[in-house]
Image (cartoon, rainbow, N blue to C red; front, top):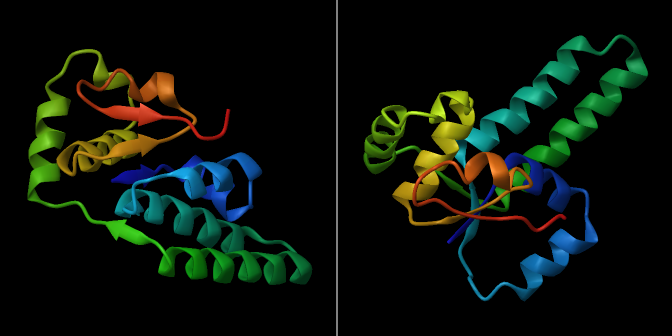
Length: 139
């Protein structure tokens, strides 16, 4: 299984040629994202909608929110489950991982729990996580 991090899913949504090509070439039929990435994407869209200052910005925010919801409806969303919770507790005890943000630690926990490869531009950041398989489809 391959799990797309927020940055990679955003590039896929925008039609980034390299990300689209890598997805097509992938032999693994199981591609999804995490509930944490879903939350991050929707939170950004909700914030944009709530902070829009003009009618034009509100319309643009609504369009982006609708497109994001359509994208998320087409992809497997992997939840945070009991195995993820065990991984999260284990990772919190690892010295040096304190620099990784909570959302990224949750994403890593889900990827580890499902023995998935995390697809992200932030490879160096996630390589600190023991036993986590990480790749980059953008650069």
